[in-house]
Length: 427
Figure 1 (cartoon, helix red, strand yellow):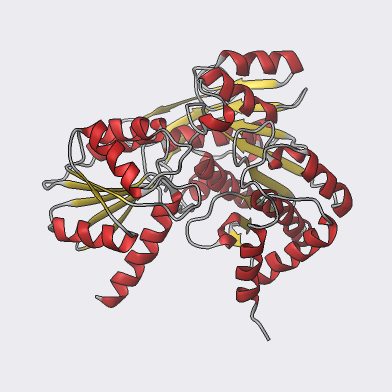
Figure 2 (figure 1 turned 180 degrees about the vertical axis):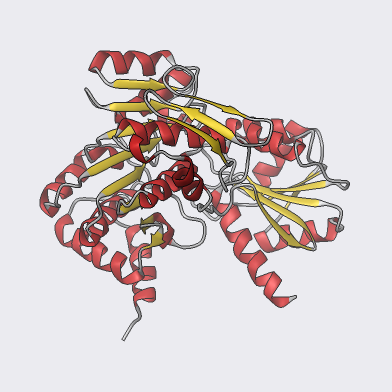
């Protein structure tokens, strides 16, 4: 008799074969299966979109709602270690048995509809949430918003963290085009929080055109740091002070936290936004692969920065944490990413480059990535045949004073973290 774990592995392999395209944006297929599944309506659905900070925002919002006594389901993507990370109930990962049962229910409803891996997983998450009887669901948009599978579920409110260039092959090659796609999660008469002060014109126009209630950072909610390291937040009718920085690494996480508080206030949780509740909630989240530091000989710093804005934030974070030695970067990227936009903010910080092929069918081959990095940085870039070879090469170059940076994609950070975990056990 096979275990639930092996069943889940088999299912995930099969899910990759159900559609001829890995990415096939559109809502019709998901709407069709949702109709067949006839799921109970959730009391509260919150969409989280944006270029960067989505995962962090989901983690903090999930913790805040749970601390407020709400049973909450959260759906995110992609995962770092195991698929179960994508579907959480009250911050605990769904079990293999729960996910397999949900897959079986979706498959029974699917018929011959060619769902993508992400679409199938989105539907399965909704099944898990129904079975668990959650009060609220937080759904992270996978790509864009307007045509993303998550948008087939009617939200009560949403958060767009920020807009910068990413997924340009799918969403457009300028900010306004990308913002328009993200604006697709807006609904008439419902709150939509925008977590940055500079609002793209297409985003503001769409909100106005459909009558969405748009709450903008710096206008409708504000925050400020204090000399002692604490911070305060003010919304439309709520004010909270003496807040501790969130547990998630990076000064920018306060920006994400501010947007989360604005969304919570907008959907009726203003009364629970108290210093004690927020501090406990925001001290809890942990996310792998976001400015994560692992000491294994040299200092390893792993961050999934895969677009120019994220790389800029990573570069600032590295400068804020200087080391006495050199920085060696292991980089892998997918073929729809802006290589130049990621490499350029890091090139003055990195002393040695190593390119490797990401663990994805959409990966840029290591030799081609090495060529691009060498041209952009005007320095040599090693072409590694495997992640193991790349990590071994980095170790050979590094001393205890050095830093090894792993970045560019979830599909290198996750495998590298697993390898470091095994390496540490062997020491």
